[in-house]
Image (cartoon, rainbow, N blue to C red; front, side, top):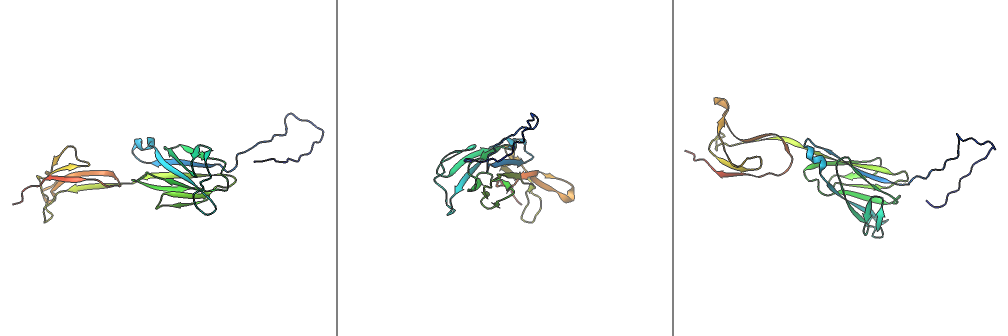
Length: 212
């Protein structure tokens, strides 16, 4: 980081076990890491896409930032990159700059991000940080939320109704509902899943039973 002047005293006694050692450290390295918390093993092999945007003093995209800064290649102040669970990317030589790290495609996950400085916006899944001299690490965590889901078929009075045919998510080919359970607690279960990821799913009634 430019020319540096080092002052020291020589006392006339040389010791090979106490040499003068000068080390150079990179200033302001920002690391971005990814953690995936999911019971689905394949989720930890997924690539999650991010965008890094460097801001100028007017809090607008700094289009003068072009080229390679650490692991990222910037064009007009922006860089796109992917991360899997346990991996990281490092941004270098932008100390003092404000940068926004945004995760783009973690739709079905609850996403959080933390570091020792900066702030997280849950709505945009973005982290804003001014890169300090001693650097920092932003940790993005994706957690796959899961809930139990049960679908049953009833008539207009809430009584279990067999004979309907369904297709859609969680249905293998097509199924016909059948009455199961004790006599006083009969159900026509379409599906019963213990751990379903939060998201949107489709269930279609292909054929409704006749009601006397």
